Length: 442
Image 1 (spheres, rainbow, N blue to C red):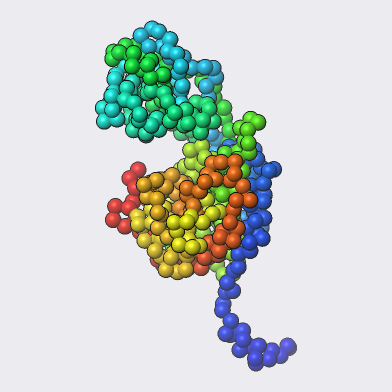
Image 2 (cartoon, rainbow, N blue to C red):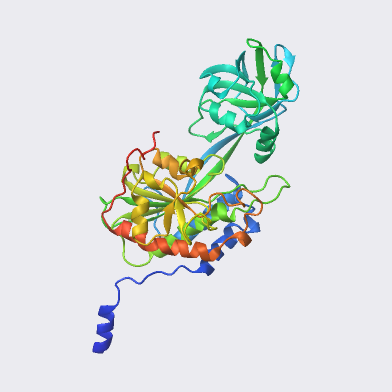
């Protein structure tokens, strides 16, 4: 029998039951080096590069000792995506005459035809019409699209100009065509086109208009990486930590859009938290770690997850999404992450009170709460928010979103600050709730 000195026993009794985990800047950079390096060419949505990124995350989950999520036999959840594209140049006829100078920015699921309705202001846009010609000038094209996209309009034609040209260039100089999960064809949406201002001014109400589109369809697959830490109390619920692992990739011979910040940084946060929380004793609540595919082309990974969750959505007591945590916003307190929709629930205040470097979103007018993967679950009632570093960082969707432009020390500190708050959330009985009118309507 080995005799243990009394002093050693005293020290052991005084030591904490669970040592604090330290996030390593070297480990943070290592994840970024793989995910945002040249080899994966920016992890384009629903591409082989995205698939490799998902496999990397899955292998890390397995290495940390995470289990398969309930009902799954592996760490990957896949979904089919149908992408449509314009197969040949679209044509537009008005009053039987070909319309010259057509710029089709947003396409529909097929041909559109009908009599022209004239609208001279955003307020005059009808709720339902086959073809609407918008005659006002100096209204930014995207503002017109935002006003019309939820209406039952087949085609809207506006005046061409710099705002339309800039928008078209930003989406790659090609028509944005419908994409959808293979299991769920999309609801109809308006087509949006521009013509030279003189051509728009010459269109008369009641003239017949016809947009002809030749459409091709491509089927691809997107991948979600999912790992699970079971809780000790099956009735206590589940915490969901998530990010999206895809980015814009590379189009043709264009530049590689590495997406080191958007969102390899968020994926890195999920991986580091998974590593930390997998160590030590089990938690009262289960914890799901999910890295979604195809966020950049419509949030399809999170939509599929929401339709096929491995645990009932009613069991998810909170979802914390990580998006672009690679740079510090100068408007935030030093070291802080902003939480989108901070005042919509009591989750942010709770995390902050337990040491999380969390602050309110200084850009409420940008509606970032509705622009990340948290939103699809929030619409289903889950208290779900996104944590972000600098949501309007100059490298956003630029070739300059590279590892060289990350603040690794800031990332490391921010991730570190969340370990104990998430442990507290997973071990306790605090359940976040929407406050006031914070719950979004589906």
